[in-house]
Image (cartoon, rainbow, N blue to C red):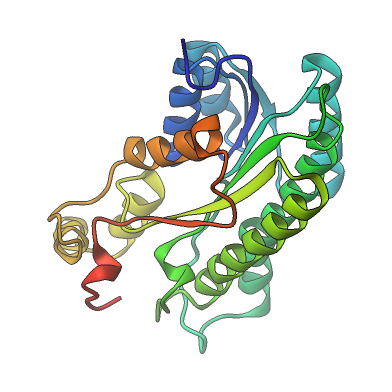
Amino acid sequence: MGRLDGKIAIVTGAASGIGAATARAFVREGADVILTDVQDEKGRALAAEIGGDYQTQDVSDEARWIALVDDVVARKGRLDVLVNNAGVFMGATIEDTDLALWNKVIAVNLTGVMLGCKHAVRAMKANPGGPAGSIVNISSITGYVGLANGAAYTASKGGVRLLTKSVAVHAARAYKTIRCNSVHPGAIDTPMNQAAFDASGDPAGMRTFFSALQPIGRMTTPDEIAAACLFLASDEASSVNGAELLVDGGWLAAPGPI
């Protein structure tokens, strides 16, 4: 018996990295998964491989959220889990951050999460049998500490951390059995981080540097983040609400430079 048997789940940003690992884990544990992304070729290929559905989605577009959630409910009958994973990183200090960069990062990383929460709650409160569901928002350790070269990114992830708490309190008070929690990765071995390493001019050196920042001596894997998402999505976490789950190899327990 799988830990998510019978559950209908949406995972955003599911074509690669944390989203892909989470989609795989959810399907393996019995969930019916709808993968969304803007990387259509990768997303469709993964959905075909693991037996999920794929839909193109710009998470900053509310009309697309409405259409996606309505389609899932119409075809599947309910929505049990949403993982708000889609995100972008555009490195810039506050002095180098122009409005276009700021708006892009906030639109995807924070507004996209807000819209996902809003429309997931709309669906989950109407589930057959009564309100029920779990929302998992992917934040970052930069939801706690500032990244000098990521003003917009840090702001967006800090926003996700506290938005999660607002959603959690509202949903619990209004519906009792709809939960919302956040996961906070440290340095993760994902294509997004590899792109940042490549852009640095010293990919190997950057990988070594970020591995050394984590007391466990290595970067965390997407599968390890997926395991945290799986726990929060499952009924095992039925009393976990508004929580912040750090999966950072102990980075913030023994902080170094960021």
